[in-house]
Image 1 (tube, helix red, strand yellow):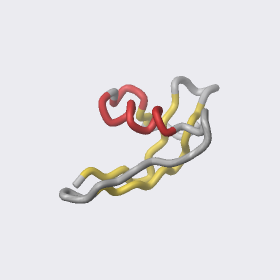
Image 2: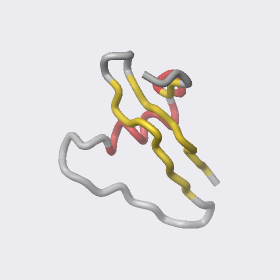
Image 3: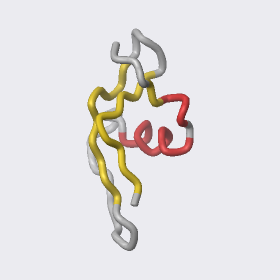
Image 4: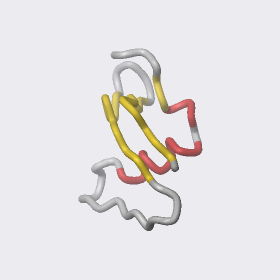
Length: 59
């Protein structure tokens, strides 16, 4: 299982992408992210692999 619990994703304090994000991906399930261009689908996936995007501070 991969879980985001109350996560903030930001490039810096002036560029917060998601605040208080909650997601859960369970092992053995197929999950898709669907949305309009520019809504943050790729940013969510990138944050799985680049933990520097995940901020502990609240902006």
